[in-house]
Length: 314
Image: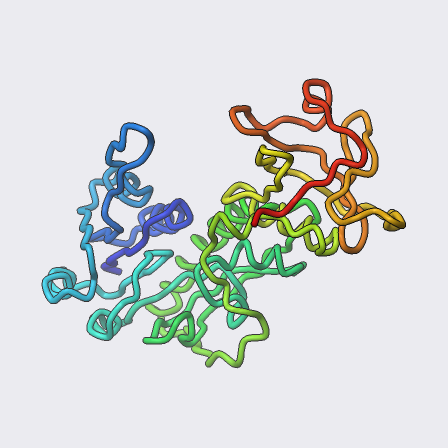
């Protein structure tokens, strides 16, 4: 099929690569404009742009896809289908209806669960044991189009946002190729979405990583895992911001008279913290100016005492 591909981050790259490998004619890659990054503010290509250039696929980076000139540009390619994976802009009806097969989206959840911008992380934070990928026929709603195919991916007890991202990116790439085959041979079935049972998976921001120690240990553990590697969960230790990269809710009773955020025990390679319900064991962290480290290394280099209380920022 002749395909226009629309995507921006790393999550979309695997699907673009899979479409090329499957023999589809990817005639254009549409991605967000380049942005300055780092101290030098050098312009950085999006991951999709880098991948497209590697395959000599033309790249188009409109500031707003709703602009008439963008719609005209896409139409000029006379594609059979538009594949959309984490593109980052809402598509107008003129683009949704532009090609014979419309716009096919690869969404990283088992729709209608976790509609929204960050379904991978919110599935972990929400305590799901299973997630997956859904391909759907896009409509004018936010992740509300008719579903075509699904594939399930288990969430392990140690799963992080980063590890689940990689699993779902691969699963989504394979599912997209399968979906286009079904569309082309006329075997695709379209299922209307019902009501969602989960909150909208809103975009992540750094502030949501600020640990509220009055929450339960399991809730905080899920937050730590879900926000690993970005934006990360953190707490305030005196005048320092302490990022927590690995933690586990342990089977231990809450200590009477201890307040949420209070350090209870210092082990050789961990320390435990009282929460609103249960105890959290911290085994990997990071302080400003240093790389991520095992808690054992942290305890050798820094003084932490039982009774210290970590705080949530104001």
